[in-house]
Length: 233
Ligand code: MN
View (cartoon, rainbow, N blue to C red):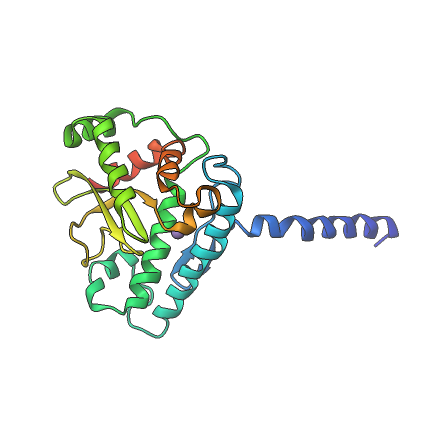
């Protein structure tokens, strides 16, 4: 190889080494049957509603820890490789480490998907009609969801889910539980979820959970929620 080509090659290698870690932070990564998902946008994409530092810590450290600990909790058990939804359906019989970390992984995977820098506004089409039918109006739905998110004591989630009859309902769950688990009061398939753990908002909003809830509506990807609703009902 000529000196010139070698020179170009080293520049290319150096650039790749510099650039790859930035992408690697967002890349999906498989571990056995389970996948740590890619973040579908940049850390600063949802700012100012959700700031870049919160996104980076939330995704790279909190979600990652749930994923790694879920993989550990499953290792060497007969449940390893089973879909999480199947495990959630018999959650009450399984170890609490799997409930906390499997829930944490599943819930955050949904959370990243139902937000978008192009989000906000109100749902359209059939989902808008279903919300009107089941809640009276979009404003009534939003009021109920806000109430669920604001009054969840300590850490947990607020959800919009579809029940077995195809009806939409709002609920909240503690810690990393979700409506797919057989441990919750009302079961269904979540199509929208809001993380109300302090780690989701404390850097930007401190104790003002209400301001964070208001900001969340500015980034909800209603097209993604509608897609989940169609698959769930
Ligand atoms: Mn979280």
